[in-house]
Picture: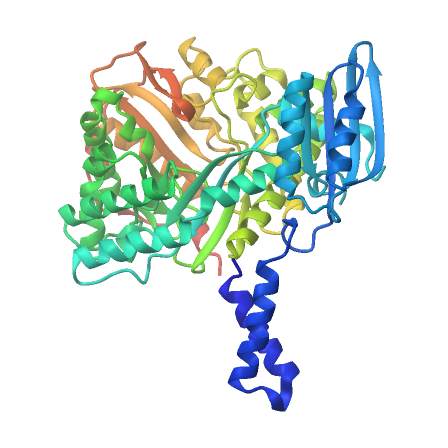
Length: 140
Length: 453
């Protein structure tokens, strides 16, 4: 749902850009097109100008097939794995992946949910968090 | 990797094992345009506005929770003090407005709605007096409404008439909610120097200097600070303060981020982060535990006030750097029933009311969730509140009293409200009487401190 504030800003922009052509009908048309484009954007982007990067942390007891299972989900949703690192401490396994979901047609929430369910199946905890949290805490 | 392995685990550990969460995102809504001569029209304006603006509050918060993997424990709403937005009504009508707030809270699915209060530090209007009169019944017959009344400030002094009346209001509220262990008193705060943008209930309200709608956030990180203090081991005061400061920075940064994102979803301005360390009854989420990890045998030992002073100061320094707008209470909360170790220390006799009072000189809240015998007189309650107000007034800080004289219960009896309000034993307090003093009426003059020009 586009807010009133955004519509007002679009209207002012349109009036400025149309110049002498800024009749009521033209402005209305331009703003309506812009609004419907905004409202029908395919994937749920993180709000405002955030990157599409998320951090997936998976931890639990080691077993074969963990990485394969997780990467299968990501591949199916056209996510781009930027980096991956893991540590194995005796039987305890921690995996961290940096993933770019900008080109994914799937909504962020669905990817998160699917991985969370996968975690339950694999008896691991799989957390999906937007990278902003880590930026906020660990970078000034 | 743009981040170190350890940095990522650090953050993950905070939410997974150290109880870090966002305590509340509070949507502040102005009700200044809702008043009508007719009470029913007023009520309908209020109901409509809260529901319209707050409709998606819970949903937006849940979306942000999922995005960032940090849980937002509570979604709340705060309003313009009802006595200001709706001055001039009768007591019965204020009760009806209270019911309207309750209904609105139910409709949008939140647990507490703040603002059923007044700012009477210099005197009261007819409407304010009537609203205060309606508080005991309103709190006892609604589920979600919380109330706060400011009776003192550094600039105005202490309104003793209002203060004594609030002591009576507390007793009445205790009696009317006796069947639920006097829970109404847990929803009522008496303040000195109340902040106008506090996101934490029961003191939350939307000040008159605030914009139309605003989003404020309160974080909860005692568990994280506790682990950091434990890990710091046997270091010097300087190093300990540094550890606490850095931890406070990280958790406040996360809080500020979440607050901004929820505000963006609502398309409203982001207000402030309240830096307060707010405990919950969960094990490991306790301020008392932090004080004990800092080296006290039990909270209440000599040195407690000093330890709390250092903790509070370090939290503020770290938190201040982390957000461009800081406000609310921003200190350390010491609610007895809401902090399991604090309640235990009180029950075991280590923590007295006097020690708690000393602690309020250096932390931000005041005497909070203190349970006292049901037969405590109005005069003694007024004396306790007056002491807290004096501390706040003279030192130019916020202090408050949220005290529960548990109806028909005596020292050692347990009151248990479950959930965030927790449980505690009734504390013994001195009952020698300040009756003549507090009943003089009138107003304490403002202290020297108020002349800052």
